[in-house]
Structures are given as C-alpha cells and as structure tokens.
Image 1 (tube, rainbow, N blue to C red):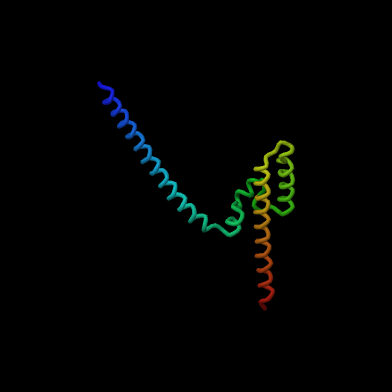
Image 2: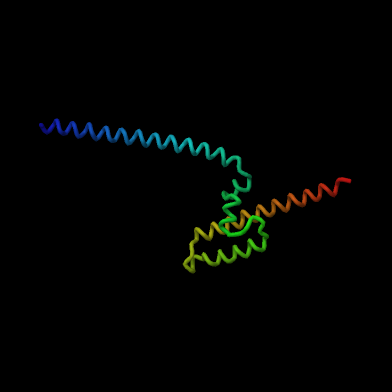
Length: 129
C-alpha cells in the first residue's frame, strides 16, 4: 500500500470513531437534560422548608442521628457533640460541620412549624363555643 492510501484510511477510521463518540456524548447529554427536568418538577413539589434549606427532613435526621420525634434539647445535644467532634482545628471536616449546622437549622424550622400549627389549632378550638 502507498503512504497516501494508508493516511486516508487512518483519517477515515479516526473520523468514524470521533463521530460515534460525539453521537454518544450527545445522547448522554440529552438523557441528563431530561432527567434534570423531571427532577426539577419533583423538587418543585417539595415543601417550602426543604426548598429553602436544600435538605429534606430525613437527611437532617440521619446527619444528627436523632429520631423523628426528637425534642429540641436532644437535637441541640447531638448538634453540640457532632459540631465539636468535627472542628477543623482538631482535624475535623468543615464540610461535615456545615452539614451538621444545616441539619440543625432544618430540624429547628420543622419544630417551629409544628409548634405554630399546634398553637393555631389550639387557638382555633378555643374560639369556637
């Protein structure tokens, strides 16, 4: 075979490989775009506190290792322990420490929401004769 013929075959083979790679990358990008759009619709249905904090209630419970019916005192006790244990100056992780803070904030917001709902329900019952 002559050198120009080999060169042309190498170029054609390489362009086929690159073409297939671009097509596959386009398909993956389209699939990711569709899944993000579907995920955005699901996130839109989440409660306002989850949208505000970016953390759902289950994740906050798991981070602080507290049960769903935990009191504010038990949440603060776990928060203090985990916050001190993950102090970056003592070899801890700032990222984990920030997740602990966000989890405490999320649980406190949920507790205040429940307290408001309870007080408004009690107030509504008291007004009715």
